[in-house]
Length: 295
Image (cartoon, helix red, strand yellow):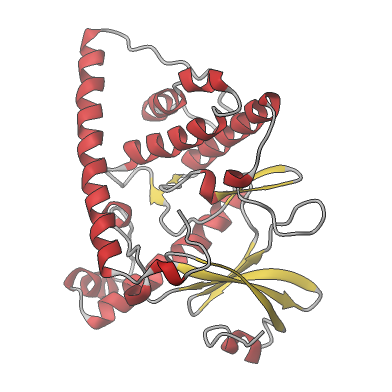
């Protein structure tokens, strides 16, 4: 196929030999299957901010640090240079998260580097060599659902121990190969310690995964992994190998009241976040022309 303009510099530099097909087109990026020597990889081409329907909601940006003071000041002022720097921070967030999570034992696509808004990474395939399906497209028996859900909870714990929360985790951001789930799409990953929205984002991530697997294993509907994991994390006792039960019991009436107030606050944050997404979508592009959009 014709080489996309944004990938041409990688071809010129010998990083990519051939673009074989377009894998998908979504809200924040287009993904292509490329050949790099004898290896088949994928190239994620981040869209310019003016072309994206999802433009880094404030809830995600909170807590992201920039060491260079000049860059930080420019980003705060919203100057042209600042917007450019903010875009670079947004794009580098995913590759940074991929390296960090791979080192922490979380299954993610292997990253090979980000070059001027193009992320080269592993193409996750099934046992026959075809592109691995998203979790949303996979049916499974009850025992497999329970096993894979348990794996996903260990990944969430390892991510949290590495200081990160996915922030947009669902059945649409997980691939399934012959070895199990692989977590993808991490440009919006948030700092668990610095982001005030961390708890409700973690809760939403965990509950999204729970709700999907509970279609095949209904007993998962009654689990409370989000509350259990966050409570252990807040105490400073969470470790990558922490054993989970999926159960959580409030200690007393005061704790119940605190939980209720927390749920109200989480609902407020979620509504604010929803309004931001709707506003950004209205300012974005018409997604009807895409093959399919990331959810």
